[in-house]
Length: 161
Image (cartoon, rainbow, N blue to C red; front, top):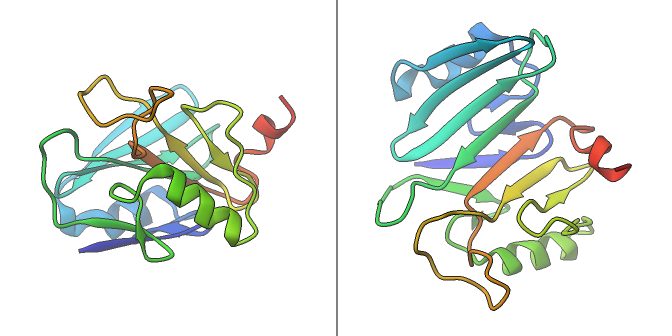
């Protein structure tokens, strides 16, 4: 199964701007999700096989603001591919993903090496894990461990920090 990322619009079957009920219906084939409400935020937790999925409705929003997908983890196998322009984000080395993003004309902000992001396109990545994985000479995991698709202005605050 392929989960295609279409930033800043969607991740797999979940579109930015969906209501809670629409998002739950979109992921229903994967099983019953867990929905948690915390102050102003609602998070839908589920898995697509071994890939963790967090669907965020943040800051009292009644609609999806972001979708984060998590690498299955060390030693776990999955038939699910998380694709960005044909690249599986969890099996293509992070530096290759970022180079290809720059070739598309996107700006990759790596000012926080463990949490790089692409503003405007609203893609964020995590390069952090305590697991025993291949690492770069700088100590970062060779591959990203999560990818987040947010709405168009999702990372604007980080640009001005």
